[in-house]
Image (tube, rainbow, N blue to C red; front, side, top):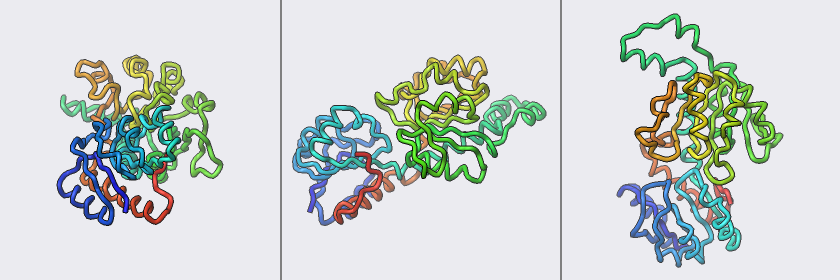
Length: 321
């Protein structure tokens, strides 16, 4: 029997499912549990007895959890746990770290695909003109493009990148993906950062799926954004800190880029007076790409499936450390 400390807050039915699925173990629920996946929960002394943690621990919580053997995050991202202080704790104690990437892969992939089709077929412009009862048929017919046969650059090739690549197959695009260590057996061509300039200059669609953290901060800075092909589209469903928004803005205002879809920004929420809200062909959604009905239930089911693997000594899914 393992002691499980949970500092994530779910609805009553989902919590009941967690308790049921964790039978045979001791489940400790934090009094300071939080619903957000983006912030670490407050430190709770109850973590001291835990072997397993489910939720979003602060650095201090990791330090207090001297018996921890496995931490399972309720998020796909793990930026704060990739920083040196957290990595040192995980490595020193041999703590396994898993994420919920599997839960968010399909929703994020479908959101990105929807945005790609929207821009290619100019639905954003047509919807804006509908409010003015404008009928610009010939203009939009000539300016529309096809996703079929286009060039797509994925920045990141984890669970979300693979799910998006699979959904792009019917459109037969040329897909290239950036990953830390390219592999010959990847289902698409993978590249490292040294090859980015060449592929940024060729891509029709650049889909940013990168996590946050110091290693990816402003990876799309002014220089790299300037390397993008004129008329190309940028999509960010990773983290807002990975894109230099101040450098992005003039490229949108001038029309040099075809458009941008931002599900994440820096900061969040994006201030109401930020000029990106009014930039041409810039679509902003409030960090919803990973959402769906039953999201919390899916998080719990993913954890419970991994709990079964842990109990049987099998490899954990979505393990990152």
